[in-house]
Image (tube, rainbow, N blue to C red; front, side, top):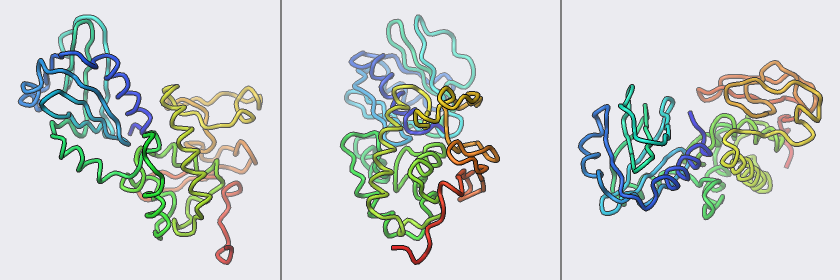
Length: 275
């Protein structure tokens, strides 16, 4: 499933391509067709991302709420839009540009109140400049659930997926199995700040890189990572490989129905009697 930086990149691209334009809207696949008719010819007012949710605004009508889920993809193209191929749920087009949305979990026309209700259910997003880490801290600091599970709960924190979860906990030397209520405020503030920086890099670059300069392939004289997700990482999908910092084999397990990766040496459990 795409992580939050992907949705923020998509929002920026939709705004760049269609912002301020009267657009043509259609649903070649069919399920969104009645709503597409209401939007066709309307002014595209902008796009916004919150966590893994994308909102596309139309003057006088409302918003298209998109959640890509596991299989959703967006493709932008130039020139006249070709005949749709495959399951195109939503096509937006203007002179010389088009964007096709395929396979989303959610593609629905909603009003302002419904948009607000969706966002009220979401935790703060490290990529939204005005979002505060405080609401997430209030939930984490009272929870007996593991930090690993809490970081993936979109009601607690928005936009963080399996890669950012694994990598930020490694970078901050936090045992992923530690209960949220055993995290101290300084550790949480460091996690939030690190996520903001890493995810902003993801928006800029289009992929996830998390290793510090001293651990890049060039600095260490090692082969670059070969993975469809791209980018250099410390532990994500590196199970059994030596930790880039200490050499201990990276471990993995199924945790809250998702694969968890960590280094048991760099992320040691905190003794129960420690403050």
